[in-house]
Image (spheres, rainbow, N blue to C red):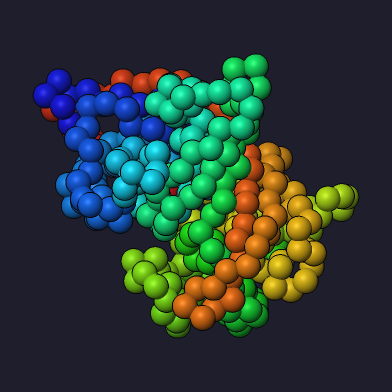
Length: 325
């Protein structure tokens, strides 16, 4: 923290999911690459993550980021994402909010029409396009890192799950997605993550830091056109994504493309448990160390919710905070 003991943030939500952007009072994570900076944040700045995510300043479902320098001059921004259990390798809703913030604040010049920004995230480099109308960012579309299917139909007791990579690894299974089901789904998500990681080493073939099951996506089919599914993603330590989950949408697109349920080029209307939506589609093929992969684009909108100045009273017995869940 700064000498004044004050941390400033700007908060957005994307599809209902919060995103807290650190704007002052904290030294930037160090390192040559965003992955290096992610490691440094864990080693030196984890007290800041806890302060901003944990109660009473945050909550178990809070999300945020440190804005960092990109890997090189080919990108406009770099970002290290954080949540209730640590530091993620990808975050679609956060990417949408971050790009919106950068244009809102003039970090990158904002123009009417389409604005192209390049963002370095821990899983790789993302191309993004922000649509500006009447001086306001209306939506952001990002082209994610190549996505691929890791496993289909893995048996976990009475459940059969699919696993795909969309910037992070997600398990997917069909379940009823309604708010009253959340307590059951949170516990089931934790159990599926635990069992999968006990039985399998799930790791990206090119980058060993991209590993393990980040989230479990529970989905249900919806009627109507375009092709529509509703989902809720339980990730990190039982954290519930209120948005349709951007990197999770990419993982779903890889599975839907592999199964042929979503014809190539058609749009997936991906709804969240609170009714917000992302739009996604497969736009091309790729290869990841010999594994067939796809290139996807996901679009959504973010909205500013406030600005904060946080402090830590040195006599506060709860210190950096706590989590009840």
